[in-house]
Length: 173
Image (tube, rainbow, N blue to C red):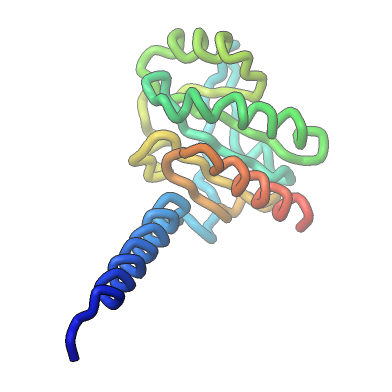
């Protein structure tokens, strides 16, 4: 059987579609944490107060690991802040975990962007290691029992729609 031009074109289209599906699946990939209890941690906020993850049990929690040098982080933060403001009163908490060595840079960025969700600082990167943070940003959604339900690595415009869908799902449970 001869390889026609149409067959070659169809093979290229199918290969491109398979690659696109793989890329999307990777962006919304889960890690070994999915389905497990989220590792507890306590980190300080800008006021020097400890914020403990386990104190947020009963809430749907989004943990967003970010850094000031991360362009996609800067892009998504106002969108996350809007989500936090909209759903905070119905049992949703967004906790930003900054991984910069110098929290002052992070505080400046928070102020410049007008972010109101709670932010804590992981300058030692110990919590980031517990959560297998290997990209920026990493967004993790926990159910009300503190179980990791969704893990997203990276950010591109439109990801916030998926976050919103998952937050609503977890709030309905």
